[in-house]
Amino acid sequence: MEAQFSVVVLAAGRGTRLGRPFPKPLTRLANGHSIMQLQLQHLRALARPPVYIVVGFKKELIMEDFPDEAFLYNPDFSETNTSKSLLRALERVPSGGVLWLNGDVVFDPRLLDELRPRLGGHETMVCVNRAAVGEEEVKYAVDPDGWVRELSKTVAEPLGEAVGINYIAQQDRDLLVRHLERCGDDDYFERAIETAIADDGLRVRPVDISEFACIELDVEDDLRRANSLFND
Picture: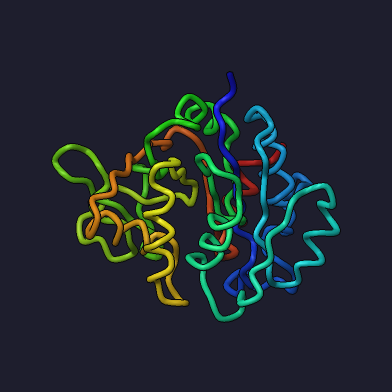
């Protein structure tokens, strides 16, 4: 029996740091594929779970490129951050676990093979990279039992960085929704995970995917790196 879960891609933001006049997920790599095209191609290998794309900025461009997908609209995309886009998704997608990712992440599809046995299970997860810790990236630290203790850009002694690919188990969804509701409009969704850990004991497993290439495209240097790693 296939594991029951949905997939959410957060693609509502303006992506101002990369400076394109269109939604960042539509940025094309040197191989001719857009970020979102590659994401959906890889995600379709996961036993074809339902995929929901949260759109906002110039939503029509994404919807025209991918007319067969399901879309959720964040009308407040210009005033809110990823916490509110994820909240909108978790309030609307079917029951079950949810794998979600930022719409600007380019990754080796073998990363999903690492996650596959865990999806649909009872453990909430954050994918992490221990190979490098960028100054502007979301970082993490763990408690003595190996569960995520801190998750933010300001972790003092980080073990690595979160890469923007995560999974919320069904039994933890309501808790995460409550903490997303408490988030400020400017908060990233990681803020809700961190407060759920600190205030309500949410257990989050860091899944080390350092062996797989995975880049969140924020600036031109990220795009150059992605083109050097994903050139076929």
